[in-house]
Length: 445
Image (cartoon, rainbow, N blue to C red; front, side):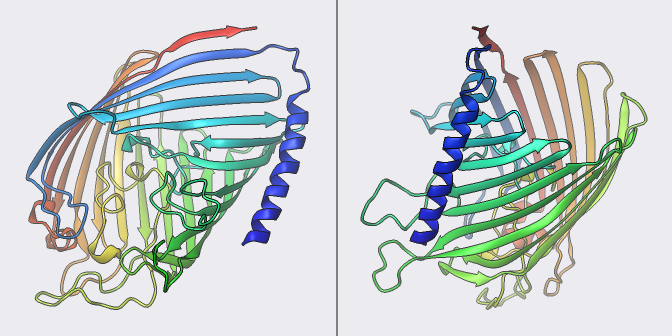
């Protein structure tokens, strides 16, 4: 591990030296500096529950308001970019700051030939955001501390991402990482994308190696270990006029850390998706699709039996750092909240929807989801339930918009058993988001 880290740091030093030499060219040309803000006010009303942890009791109804405020500073000149975003998130009426952090803070050096190097805290977004996305609907959103180097040009994009995280600057016990800003200890990612010239087809390949630490920091008998999980697969987007066909396939292997046992277990999981969108004109369109995420066996115990079931392998697919509310229903019952003992029965999501623009500033959409587990439950139906998502957004100006949505969930006994709450069978959820994001100041010098 030490030799690997030394080689990585040496590579970083060489790349940074080269990158700064690129950035220093053309330094006498135009510099651009901008200041902006992003104010998001979000409210929710829910009837019917989503217990987060085993044994948790969920009230039948909840209401709350959230506020998220970001200050954004950006700088750009030929060969160099920089960005800093300070973020505060809190519940209306709470005492003090619930979450104040640096959401983004990075510098990016670019060469004329298409090479670049970026270092700092970055909000990542790749392909359709199924595996790596900002997950912005979750308010706090996702960002990563990393070094990213790559090439972009002539239809090709190739990125290499390296990350290594610690809890603190500790010389004597700096091997353990938990409860930090990132969900992993170490991560290496390679992403390649190609857009076919003069043909509406783009394709991507993705490989990730993610290391998560297992064990306890203060356990003298069993030292913590880093367990590595690999994800690999691809995404395809075919988009001729008025029609889009998307597809993806990913596999997971290696080890997954069992949160209960604090140890790594072998992983064999996969997922596949397909989505077709037809938009005859700028006023309306339709989409249809299907997602299949593999699951663990024996997640739902027979009536009257305990949950002490041994799983030799993890077969439940995890969408890692994707924008989950975008794909499996806006409520996302399935990957934002846990199942019994942390295992998942997987998910089948068949959906059909329609969208339209009644006016230039108004966009509306509606989607129906048929939801089912991917494995065979013990004595229960595979069907989890039916969900209907209704959404609308209105742009008052270019920097002021209002979004709102309403979800109806009709669950089955399978849903109730999985979520350990009768209130999970039927739920009503309404929400709104007011977004104000002006540029306060911009200048060139």
